[in-house]
Amino acid sequence: MNREYWVNRIKKHGHTGWADNLTYIYDQNMRLSLVKNILIKYFNNPVNISLDYGCGSGDFSCLLAKYSNKVIGVDIANEIVEIANANYPEQNIEFSNIDTEIFTNYSYQVINLITVFQHMLDDDKLEEIILNLYNLLADDGIIIIIDSFGLKEKSEYLKSRNYHEFVQLLNKSGFDVLETHNLYHPQGLPTKIFELYSRNYFIRLLNKIKLYSILNKISTLVSNFDNPIVISETGTKLIIARKSNYGIG
Image 1: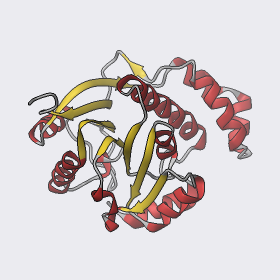
Image 2: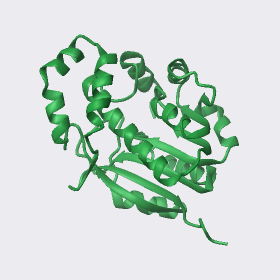
Image 3: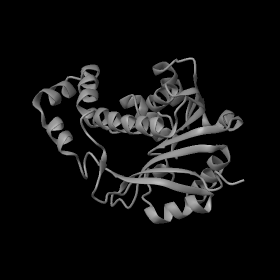
């Protein structure tokens, strides 16, 4: 990953997601709701410790903290970590640079990766990281992945891989896929609700005059009535996996 690119992006936008804040805020709320429902489904009690790998500005770390005794959020640059710390100074969240490898001292019941793998351009490095994550995952833990596959878009910061080959890599690394779902895409396959929301004059005005706190409140309310999971085959996928040997012995 190109550290300079991501540092410049978070300094410019305050986050590492969509450049258009109208899209970013809505999409982020949709993803947060999705991960929240996964945590509720798979865990009856708070998990001991969770890892937010590629934490960005810290939104998902904050969500995980509500369902975990402790959360470690890591990213590739100190500047990103500083912003996450400023956004979410909660006592049970610890943000750090990936290079410090502090996060390797724990075993995690949840490992969360939101649009991380698609920005790893080196296939060998990708395989190495997946193996490392396998070793960090507790035997009863799950790994949550949202990523894009088979995209036609070309970028020096994005690598689109074949979904089935990626699943084979997960299997090779010792994971079993529990669930996989097709997700909406705000540009490629928007939901009807998002289309209406994004075209609304008042919403577009709030975005233009940068009243993002109000936009976030409205987006949170509207997105509660939306569903990011779609029936149509899409390049954006949700994958939930766990260790293949879980429950053996």
